[in-house]
Image 1 (cartoon, rainbow over the protein chains, first blue to last red):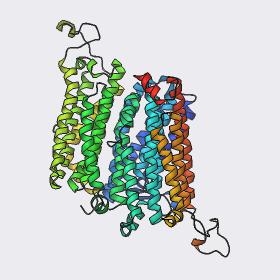
Image 2 (tube, chains in turn orange, yellow):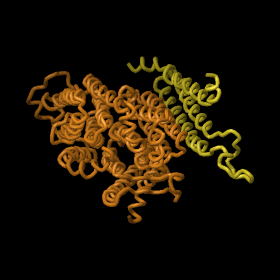
Image 3 (tube, each protein chain N blue to C red):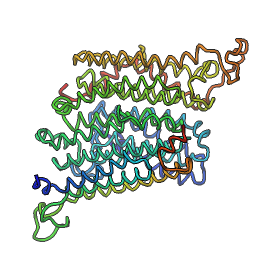
Length: 504
Length: 120
């Protein structure tokens, strides 16, 4: 491995971290530079992540010892196929989301650009750090960096945003503290904090109750952090009241990275034969996930605010990911992991489309969307592609992750969960097609008192799209959803098959 | 019973503190009280970590003459970890207080019931 490949592992963290300090320094005088520094840092990280993915795929796992201290004493960054996959996902999505944030930040937070991008880059750093680290305590530190910046970013929104952010602080702190307690219990029994070292030391200690308590704390902490039903109460308010640029960054990435932590804990730190089979964690997770899928979808139907509807649909989709993890066979795990990727893309496209609608029309109530296709045809096209993928229509990506989940459920002989997945697809269709029907098949309503403007008037509605800097990233991500679906074969056989640990 | 309570009293103390904090976070309606509960909760975890580093008869973790064995020193690692956790807890409190200021400026109260009533 050459120096660039090895040092990419640290550069991917350092560049956005240092840039986030540079933004207030340089932005003090030249406020316009904030966006360009942020975009530059995200671009460098994206290139690093691609270099890392290539190196990991061709030459195997990368180990980076910080300051030359050897593990288990020093902090070690480990990138195996699972991390590399998550890194590329986070970086590529952030690249497009940051591009699209320019116009919406300019409009919604014109005098707070510098502070916004400083915290934004810290959040990005935190998410990457969680993914890249191979040390359980270091993960906690990055978790708090990401969470603290997310609290701050959510609090800048309008009406209920500070209260939503405060509730998120309380719930997020409970979650992070549970994770910290889990680390503490493992430290009592093993005396180590390095994940690979823990995995080696733990198997003889599986009889110990301390190990079991640690596992339970990890699962509870991460369930709160990723908004798994019934610990999801902070999530809808936080996503709804956050500024558009923030919700389109936090909604696709934050909960998915937390789901990654749960995968890491259950599959790497513990052996899946213990964490999923010997103790009933897998069973509990699958039933919670089934409840999340059904109740999240039903609550989404009840919403008339677009962002709140998408937030409840996030609750349901976290359910799919956890369902794949909980069933614990190879096909279901691939389904869960693939759904992390798909759901991140779908939610990014949906929230970016909703940011565009907010930008142009200033509305979020879906009953005001009548005839929106005439005004914003391209935005609505992206919205439709993402919605179809949410419902699971082939050849979009959402179909394939649900297919693998169903195949996994068949292999596990869990017929009930097949029914859950199928019913929830119907429920998804109900709430997404409602929006599509209003936008595409109802006459345009410009807000005048007349409920049904005459058809002649309708022809006059000109196209009034969101700015190109928002539109193009949205369309690229929407195209990505279809491409992920069409090229699901290479992604699954090339990357995800190697992510699933041995023993499956 | 008494023996098992007494021999592990540090764990019982941390659980009691943690539950007090937990109750305040979930049960109280005033947002500042919730924040105080959160602080108690985090402090409980810090105390727990500090207590697991302690050894009977252990001394400062500085290499001294005549004490060659690791068992003669308390374990410094949990203490170092808690330095980081204290920093995290301070910054969480800072962010939470800033958010509380925002809430107060917007709603003119810190009682959760009244805020929810005014938002409706």
